[in-house]
Length: 344
Image (tube, rainbow, N blue to C red; front, side, top):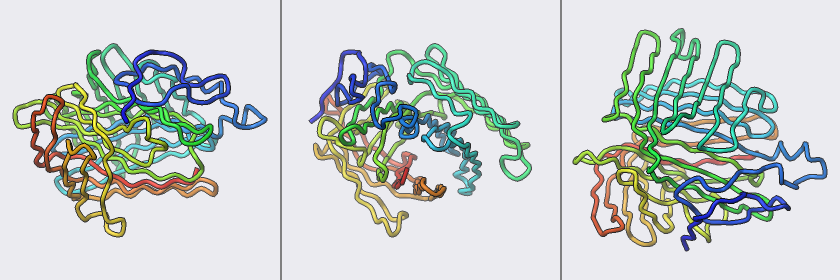
């Protein structure tokens, strides 16, 4: 079931269709959306593309996230902060017409994002073995300004999951997810200053490019943290992202090495997301219970575009089995699991 792509090349063929399907452990295929043939007018093809860079930093005490997205008709830029001590949330979003100001690179491993809207700036910079986030957002929480600079370290030998997934005849999803990047820096929110250190702060990246069906649904689960012995542990689980017969994106990471998994169904109560979720892989190498303690609801409703996400923050408990047979116990690993529906 798990077809691994090991050779570089273009993502799309001359007809704008995926040349290969499956997963890789590194970014290998060149994203070439100029080959799309979706409408008689090439300029309209841009409206069908969905592109985003989503960063998330987890510590035992708080969560910080920043996104720049161009979803064809609009641009979406949002930042949010969650304090786990009191479950307080602060979030701001900017919506731009036709993606104005949201220029995203074609590679997850090169190129920068520099979004400026008035006095608000969101920058994602790529440096050798590093990702740098710089954010300035006036009046982010009431009258409190946000100023943040985070440096996430991504060594060249760190493995990650890259997916080439068909979603129909010409629709596709090209996605790169990186977990457990050790992070330093600081987040200043008004008078409050939070210092980040590599022994407590880990950043993940969700880099997505593709053409999606108009109505879509997915589940995604992720976590980045530490085992009691100090090793970094990360989870990436998902379903609903198109045709997964060639490969799933399910895996876990142990100190930067990927351990690939088969299908992982998400079993939960969509009438009460706060109830525990059950996740057991078909190969029985992952058996987890996810117990939420906080719900973040995100909604966008702009005529032809509507999105609703329920991102649940909670704790993963259970057992993972590594490639060499090691049984890894998880207890109180903070992460999230979500349900997301979109009409876009």
